[in-house]
Image (tube, rainbow, N blue to C red; front, side, top):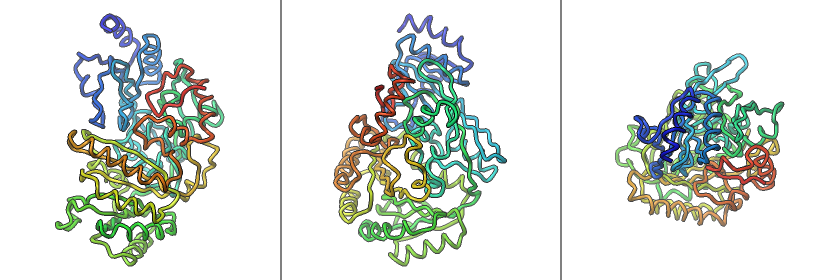
Length: 463
């Protein structure tokens, strides 16, 4: 590697408009740092791309020099796949531009943009893309796996709103993929993850949202868990589509709206977001509190961009994280028993379990039109997330996440799940997640990446 570093990195620097960082360069340690502090990787070289041509040159350099490639967008990969030891990291963070056409309701988004970049640009016109819930998440990684968030019930997944991508494939080709151009590749990148190349630009359809929305949080104690979850399973599916509810098993935050005696108290919350009228939102909160009086509640209008930033601090950089997801077709009594038995066993007050109810626009998308796995059936996507401020807590909290997953497995839709919620490599789970689509994805992988150059992901091996 020393010989390569002396001559090869200069060659790469000459080929890029962006910056090339080797381990001895200023800025290298900041550039290699990942959101999940559990992973501490040292790439041989970091290519901070500014253009699709930079990405093209970096891929060709890595392939020619037999360097393993990692692709870093927002760096939120739970598994640490966005970096690599002794390989080449393609850092897209400089490619964070967002261009909005409010008349056509379209946005072009650089492959390194964060959700915060996207929200700021689109909300200037009262528009939004259905995306995730943490503003420092990368648009790219989230979208390629599907993309769930507050607007999923109303407007579907991120991939359901994708018009086209610009992508650099393993041989260095810069391609456009859309329904009318390379449609097989376009199908694959909508749910198939980063297996097929490096997406340098996304084109999204936009929807009216905000600029103000309604937020409500209704919090129940641990002893109310079984009643709260049974109430939630009855109420949530019947709410108007302008309302979305996430069930959260968490510790109450030490926020001004939380009574001091409940700060850090573990329990169950229904987070209710309204995109319609304030009255519709107030009626939903009244229905919930009447069905089961909570320990406390909070309700307020807020800007959509503030909603998207609400969970940022709780999911900040520098913590030690682990995640395992599962699909539940229903919140059965057996599942509720398993949840309420396992949730009190977590040891980090920052760890959470989130339940997204998938219905509405999510069900209306044609299942065959994208590679998204698992089928478009009404269900709950469950995310069990260990968040540890200290590395000494990590092993115990990871064991808790795995224990909850095991306890829910008898009540689940199978071993598969949402690929963005998978931390551990597990080919059986991945195949189960894609079902009948896996073989088609493997064929497309063989066409565009026959040597599996892009394998630092939930990897689909070439057929």
